[in-house]
Image (cartoon, rainbow, N blue to C red; front, side):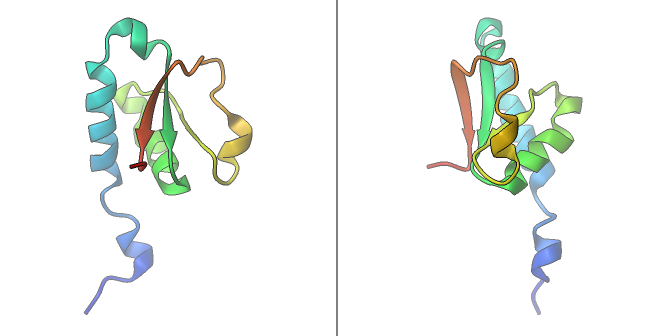
Length: 86
């Protein structure tokens, strides 16, 4: 018995964003002010955007889907937290 992929894809996102928030908030304040969160896929970016505000995270950027068009907004992106990259 396996979990259908639609349900499996719903699991673990909040934990991922908790880990991103831990790294982000460990940065010095001057680095946080210049940081962006670059995600490797749409799911990660969506999780950061959904769970991130309550963790005081900036919005995600990604080179996939419609995220490509939004870009980093007014953040310079001098510091990049890469999520899902090796």
